[in-house]
Length: 285
Ligand code: MN
Ligand code: MN
Image: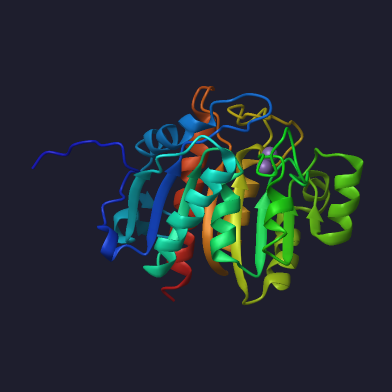
């Protein structure tokens, strides 16, 4: 029997009914403020996933041993509020079927819909930006408003990696949320911060969102709103490895703009697998 490639995430060979994790893409970038193109990310990340070995030495597991399924891409509407509703609806169906949603953006605003449906106790996000604008360029669902919208559903918010925002945003973030800036990560180290974060979350439900621009743009330049002086891919992997052991109800990886030599998409593909494998393996013990 010969093997045939397809456009689904590599090793996502499990049928929907048997899968615990369900990947889907949201190819939407209608509100991007600087460079557009994140709509091309789901396909680019899937393509990059074929570069990866099926074996993960850290977990000593073959990816096909984990039941995960790829539904393909959501057929997106044009307006951000409608896309948020579409995502909320799609995630609602996954929740009914007891799946863990693994969403590939698209821009960051797609996260709002997933969080609205899942309503976790905690929201952990890695991002260069605070995304705390109440409205931006005419929409409260702009990708610069994600944290502000999420805060309407989720009480406890942890931001890791910010280094860009207004003075008012930073003041509010320090006041209302658990803020670990990129400078904090640099000074304290990601392990110490994750120890603290893990204690805060305890056994409560958590949603984990990775905005690709949390990573330093000099390492992964395929970004719509690139920022230097950021985290490393290894830092993000540490976040995912640690948080995946928690009571995670949903995960996303957003804001990849595949206009580079492929670094940003391959890091995303690795880290999506890292979440699935980490979540799965921490429940096998
Ligand atoms: Mn963001
Ligand atoms: Mn960002």
